[in-house]
Length: 131
Image 1 (cartoon, helix red, strand yellow):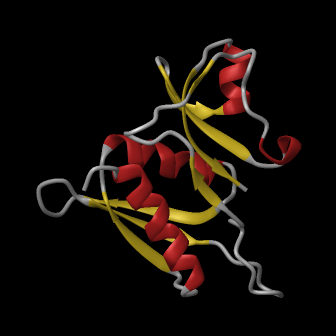
Image 2: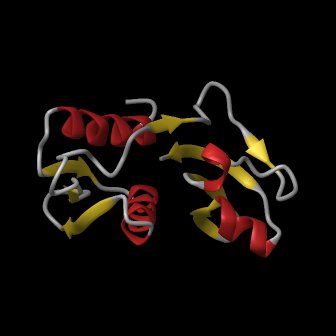
């Protein structure tokens, strides 16, 4: 596997399309941080880090609207790929759906959302858009 972040996003996207409640993803530190951000911003219901095997897994509980059964995540889009990295400065931070969505940025201070990076005035690699 050459792009573990794209695999992570695809597993969640496929889980949403299949209406699964829980999705299992192989763990890494970057994926754990990405999962924490999705939970803090209300895109997933819950998560659990399982320490089984050499690297462990992440169990992600997907969030759906109780009435319409629509997922909280409308779109997960990978921006920076191993073949074409996308970097941005804090002044040129991308706005996802005019500020309604989030862009996940990998910075020197760690993984954070576009709004947090802009407040700290640091740029970095744009990992993905979530809305």
